[in-house]
Length: 304
Image (cartoon, rainbow, N blue to C red; front, top):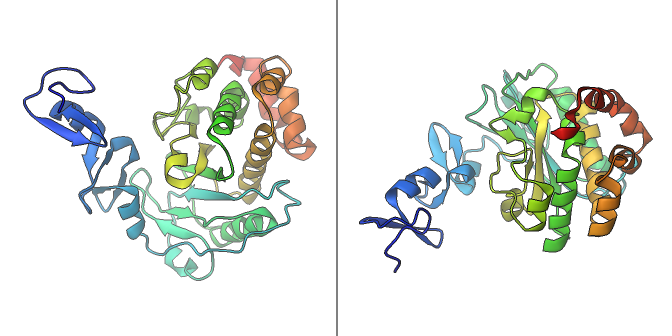
């Protein structure tokens, strides 16, 4: 058994065992927590607050007021341009009467300590059928509201990928972060629950990235859900904004997963990266986001 803390390396009279590491009580309190439901140990960054309790993911799910419903996977994707599976999480500030939506939507509902309303979570969706379910929910939730505390998150299925593909995808996302960041409200880039990536593209290639789930691109989601979570977009219940954001990322992921390092650099590590991303997501989506990208160039967000 180690005689020193494996994090701060100081001698410790009291040592705690956490996820394969012997650490001192000070480091434990700074990094880990005990789930108040099952007693399991987990990283604080992976904890959830529900009913004023700090919970692990599995216990948090048990507090759902209703679970999302599994829907058949769609084989057609005229709107999305991809049949890759995805899921969305929609946070609200006010959702009076939300229990009336039960049995009317495939979405589930959960509490979230960072917002005043509820968080509505889709099951695994795909293609045209998935988009229809998102639009249906937005119609049902037309009287709900969002505010500055709310976010909209997308999970993209990566079950069919290798570790090398995921690393190159993370690298491509880091190179194009300035483009994605230009499409969301500026306040989101500094939000504590949606931080700008604290690592460089070169860090990604050495495997030094994705240490927190509270980043614009949450790579820790792969360990739990086998997805990458895009946390960047502000809270919205606008079906067009939601569906366009999903489509843009699905098309980007599909394209990059078929590229090697050399091709990724040739497309995104130069002044033409903006044009190449436009080609990947298509004219309709490019036109939808054109104003944001034009303003980004004018204010020099290229250096973000």
